[in-house]
Amino acid sequence: MRYKFAEITTVAALVVSFTGCDTANYNTNANANRVANSNAAVVNANANLAPTPRRGVTREEYERDRARHTREAKESGRTIGSGVNDGWLWVKTKYDLAAADDLRDSTINVDVDNDVVTLTGTVATAAQKAQAEKIAKAVEGVKSVKNMLKVTAS
Image 1 (cartoon, one colour):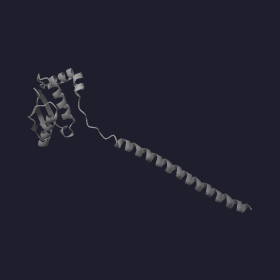
Image 2 (tube, one colour):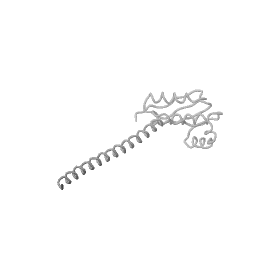
Image 3 (cartoon, helix red, strand yellow):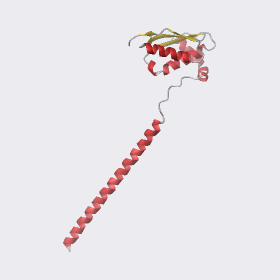
Image 4 (cartoon, helix red, strand yellow):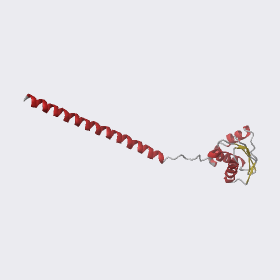
């Protein structure tokens, strides 16, 4: 009888250990699935938060900070004429040029006089020069753009 008891005990131990393994594997898989699902939810949430382009400055923000913008222009040696919209056009053009990804390595100065924007400074390619002019012309209120940018290899 003792021999049969040992066999039964061994079989029972194996059953318990296999059952424990199944439970451990089940719990491990369940935890891995929870983490994977959690990570997928974060990735999906972040996918909906695509990088937003810089929106620039609004007219209201400009009016609120007009003195600061005028001071910055003068301190940098830039010209803002006496036209009614010259200050606004200077700020808006500067912000729009700074927001352009392909112009980040450029040094572009903006001067405005009677709604005419003058671009000076340096860019790396002719395409960047054309892009800067296009951006400046797209600013509402700009009458014309004098593109005096120089193309220099970096």
